[in-house]
Amino acid sequence: MLQLRSVMKVADNSGAREAYMIGIPKKGNKKIAYIGNIINVVVKKADPYSQIKRGDKLAAVIVRTRKEMRRRDGSYIRFDDNAVVILQDKTSQDPKGTRVFGPVAREIKDLGFNKIASLATEIY
Image 1: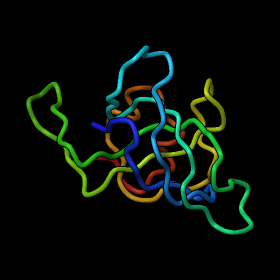
Image 2: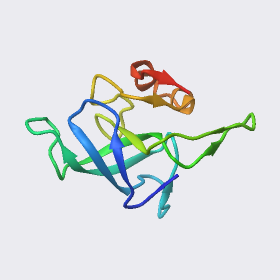
Image 3: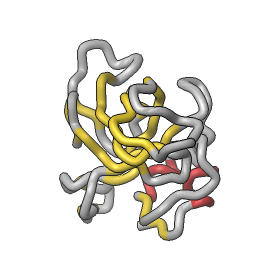
């Protein structure tokens, strides 16, 4: 569960390191996003000489949150940090990077982000 202005890690090798949530497209005035939601972010920290620069506005999908999330079977899933994966554009479900670092929630694969799930090191 992330809200506007949340700062989170970028879990791929696109060049961005830290992102800041500025909105949730197609959700009206909603201010809270969960695992699997596509959000708009601004890059706060980036690697030098990378394609993505500081201040770029991009689309990203949430892959990990510190706030626990209840699953349909009654169990809960929780991670150590908040993380996103940068997408190629707002309509695409393909990641901009070629690697995804750290674990990813199983809900990502269920929501159709198969490429992100296949690139992830672990799926919880």
